[in-house]
Image 1 (cartoon, rainbow, N blue to C red):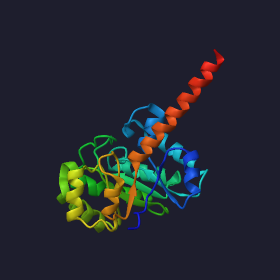
Image 2: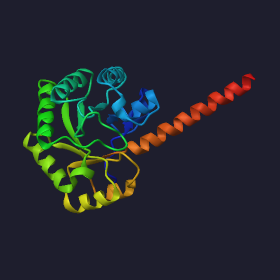
Image 3: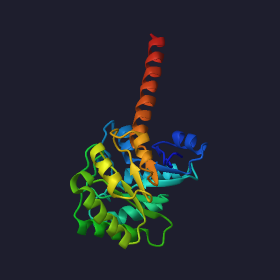
Image 4: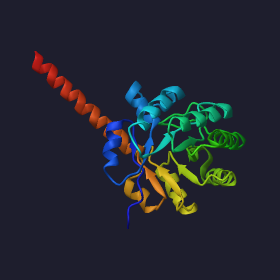
Length: 240
């Protein structure tokens, strides 16, 4: 079976340039990886909009790849979401990934999702912020452990009614993944591997539209950091 399309994850220009040498033309610029890089904590909610937007602008100058910006939960209410969409589009995002967590979003254990009414309001606010701009909106549903498969279907229905075709489902565990695979067609839906609970092979067998392997990227980041520390320690030892 042909592998599902992988949208790689990056938080620095060096890795992004390595990815550009492959066939990948789209990259997810993860706030989670940036938070780990800047604060040494696995919590994307520690980043503010200005920090992320400034990084995205600098990254945009280095690449022609399609950049999927991490809009988190819109950095607040619907008005904040509007400004988030404006700012990240202005900063070079080709697509804005907006999750349905209550602000502030959290990487490891997602916050409870916003209500359906607030969810629809935030999507509309993001669309208004992107009006007249080339960036497109992508919805990431992070609250499946709270609202289950029926909630996934409700939120997909709202997104489609607003004309949003790009959907990502994140923070899956094995039990929810099996239920999702049996009850929802994933042909046009992407899956985010936020935490290492489901193997890549199992995810691909569900034949989603694409996979965003965030957990794999965290492993890579940890490996590179460990190697850098090791080299620095070796150099310090040589000076003694």
